Structure formats: C-alpha cells, structure tokens
Image (cartoon, rainbow, N blue to C red; front, side, top):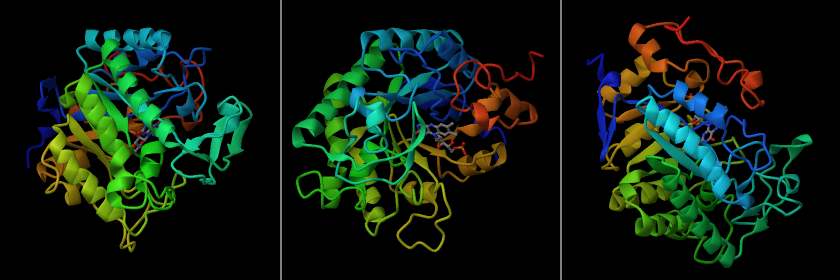
Amino acid sequence: MNKQILFESFNLKEIALKNRVVMAPMTRSRSDNPGSVATELTALYYAQRASAGLIITEGTYVNRDAVGYINVPGIYTAEQVQGWKLVTEAVHQQGGKIFAQLWHVGRMSHPDLLNGQLPLAPSALNPFEKVFTPEGFTETVEAREMTLDEIKKTITDFKNAAINAMEAGFDGVELHSSNGYLLHQFFNLYSNKRQDQYGDSVENRARILFDILDELKVIMDLSKVGVRLNPSLNGFLGMKVDEETIATFDYIVTRLNDYNLAYLHLSEPFTDVSGNQNAIQEVAKHYRPIYKGTIIINRGFTKDAATKVLNDGHADLVSFGVPYIANPDLVERFKADAVISSPDQTTFYTPGEKGYTDYPFINKN
Ligand SMILES: Cc1cc2nc3c(=O)[nH]c(=O)nc-3n(C[C@H](O)[C@H](O)[C@H](O)COP(=O)(O)O)c2cc1C
C-alpha cells in the first residue's frame, strides 16, 4: 500500500493540485453584512486552509431566490464578486486552488428569508424541515412550483453566477446538485411531481442539471466545472431515497461522461441505508466503473480511510469537511500524524472569528 498517496500531486485537467486532499464545501454563515458579501475574514479563513490540494467554498447563492440560510455570501452582485476576489487572491497567494460552490436551496427556505415570497421548488411540497431565519429555527412551508420561465431564469442565473465566479478569480465552480437542495429536488420522485419536461421520467428529472451544463459550456471550459451528488441521501434535509434512485443517478453519472468535467464529487450515505434496496450502499465503489473522469469522495474520512480508498482505486481525491473546521493545517497534521482536533459545534454558523479563524496550527504555536 502506498502510504504517501494522499500527498501526491494530481493533475485536475489543467489545474495542478499539490496533493489529493480537498476541503469540502461548508456553510459558515460569516457574511453578516447587508450585501451578503464575503469579507477579509472569509479570505483569512480560506487562506489558512490553502495547503489543501483544492478548496471548495461554502455554497454561494446564485440569485436572491436561492437564499435559505442567513449570513451566507452570494455571487450575484458586483459587490459580492469584489468580496470573493479577496478570497481567491488570498488563497492563490498561499499557493492554493479554489472552486466556488454554486447553490440554490429550492424549498429549503422560508418566506422570512425571501421578503415574504414562497420558496421556489420543482413542486408545491413542504420538506417538513426546519430552517434558520432571523427569528431562529422555523418550520418550513409548502413551496411554490416553479414555472417553466422560472426554471429558465434559474438556469441563466447559474450561468451568470459561474461568469461572476470566474471574474472573481476562482479556478472553477462546483454545481451544488446534492444534499436535498434545488437540483437534487428535481432528481427525486418524492420532491418532484411535475408532469412536464422537468418531471416524471428519469431523463426529465435530470434535465435541469444538463441544461445548466449546456449553458456553462458556451461560456467556459467544462474542465473547470465540478458536479456534486449525494445519491443515497435518506432521512436527511427533507429527502428520501425513492424506487428509481439508482436508475436516476446511474443515468446522470453515465451522461456526465460526455461533459469532460473537472470532477464528480460524490458523498457516501449520510445515514444508515443498509437494508434499503433502493439505495446505493457504497457510492464510490458503485460509480468508479461507470464514471470515466476524476472522482472526489466524501463523508467521514480519516487519513487512513482516505489512503485506503485512493489505494483501492475507488476515487482520485478525498474531501474532508468537519476535520477542516478545527484543523486549518489538516495536510500538515496528516503528514506529521499529529492530533486531529474536534471543532466546537456551537460556532459552526455564528458570526465573527471565534470558531472560524482562531483554530491553532501545529507549527505556529
Ligand atoms: C458546518 C457544515 C456546513 C456544510 N455546508 C455545506 C455546503 O454549503 N455545501 C455542501 O455541499 N455541503 C455542505 N456540508 C457537507 C460537507 O461538505 C460534507 O459533506 C460533510 O461534512 C461530511 O463530510 P465530513 O465527514 O468530512 O465532515 C456542510 C457540512 C458542515 C459540517
């Protein structure tokens, strides 16, 4: 077994990664300013973590309708683009690479976050979850079904967000088509009851993702675009595996082979799905023979498990979420077999530097 494989460089199409450790996208809710702008503090946070081979930012909203959590930075105004420039410059100065995760929450929102409007979704359904509004944790409501014009506008908004991301100096973008948010809501039979060209059949439920990719193809090289999928999301964020989950995601992943993407970012199941015949039990293992490009695998990895999955050939890169919160120098800690600290969960989404940029480095104290 190659024990150093995690620290080997990797060629992500034309982007040279210095190792195979990826920082997974994580919402940290530090943009507590009127314009929902990434700040110098955001830049410091990501620059501290720039020894990762690749950073994927927190989800960033593609338009005003996409909002579902407070204090999350957007990427749809000129001011927001200026904010993200601080981030990309700081990361590049440290020799890092960074993709922006483009996000629309769909029904995982609330009128209190949308100037009184109902959340937009494939169908008029309530996910029966809680979302964090200025009033605190609040029950979700029944969403409003998107019209075809609204779907078209949203596709354009993803395209414009990608243009903004490239203007802000990002190395690429990741489409957040995962974790029960808008694009994932289209894929799933329980969240999509449409009977038009965006519902019913597998091809129709997957259509919005390919519509966005076809738009992006016109304005940028798809080798700078990643796609995130969490096929076996079950009993989490309002989602349930349905009887066509395997067929749907097999169709999506097979078709993604035609798009020459930077990567496919997959998650292993977030909850126990053993015994659920409709769920993919081992996601990387299932998709490695199907997907011809680069696979990033996520969820619950330690250094040893990551080394194993790479050596087994089930993935090319491994992304780490929670470990990156309290260990800005995660790569150095892995190299030194140093202690991996646990983060303070009470400061995951609170404003300011506490629990954000004040975690120590092993070699700087
Ligand atoms: C605080 C927090 C915020 C997150 N925000 C996002 C997000 O904005 N976009 C996303 O795709 N996943 C998000 N995730 C999920 C992570 O990317 C990752 O899938 C999850 O933490 C499991 O990986 P881990 O076991 O390495 O932490 C978030 C996770 C955490 C803990």
